[in-house]
Amino acid sequence: LAGVTPEAIADDYVAAAIRFNSALGVAPGLTAETAHSAEVMEERIASRRPVLLAWLESLDVEAYLRESGLSTGEIESLGRLLR
Image (tube, rainbow, N blue to C red; front, side):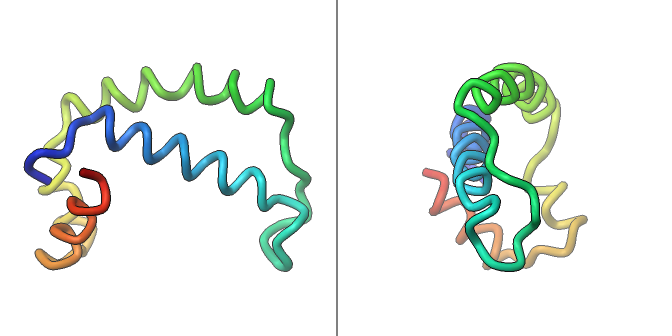
């Protein structure tokens, strides 16, 4: 994922968490759980983002994704989405 910063990956994680939260209790079959308040989401993100950034700084993301079974094409596509 050359050119993709840890911050971009963390930002994508935050956006995905917010989208998932907004679908709780709305999207059929997702889960019976209801969405958390904005305050709860802010607290969760504030506590998790620094840990995620520290992990990403110490991680070879491309190697991790390869070991997880992603192909070169999938990794390149992911990189384009995050840039």
